[in-house]
Length: 168
Image (cartoon, rainbow, N blue to C red; front, side, top):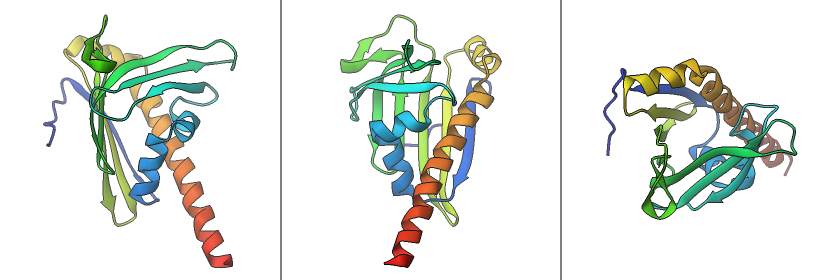
């Protein structure tokens, strides 16, 4: 299923990550790996729920000092298509329960690219005001930073794996 772009409502970041798609997928779907890149450093992420199936709960917290954590995402997965796409929203909670204050639906896609993986993250909003607010809150810097952190993590792991294979 293809999502039609709506530039007046959507914000997107994309990047070619120089690592196999399976490595990018793993960094996204393994809570321990996810915590390493999901929020802009030096902030810290903690995954409370990552129930990777449609209707599954997705809850994270973040901290600036590693001691006091506050809510970051409280939502629900809408689609989890292995190695291809993850869709989540904060409009619903786990079990398809309606949320109090919906703000966005995110579509994450991963495709093979001659240099590794084409990674695209799109935040879809219900209206222009929400989109503009998200942009003013620093969408490009924040989502761009975490996409770079994801790339750095999986590219370093891919490089380490290649080095291990050469020495074996």
